[in-house]
Length: 77
Image 1: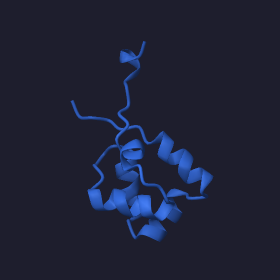
Image 2: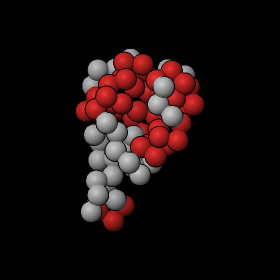
Image 3: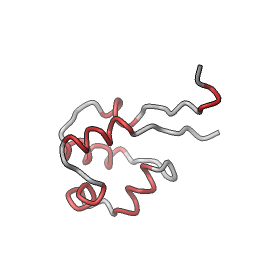
Image 4: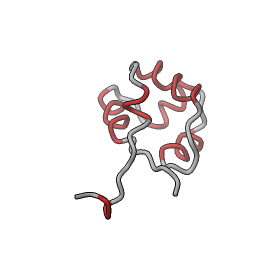
């Protein structure tokens, strides 16, 4: 079973700093369709993509924002 990541904290930070997916795409040069695939767990982020997003939005804790695993509803207590 593939690991599913939860990007909700990253989305909250993006919202606080006025970044939509479109603006993030425009400022990082990562195509919007690529970001969409990655945020929807269809493909994985490359290390270089995580770093450019962190640098653009302005955070250092890459692990916190990119490696939070989503727990399926049937496994939550």
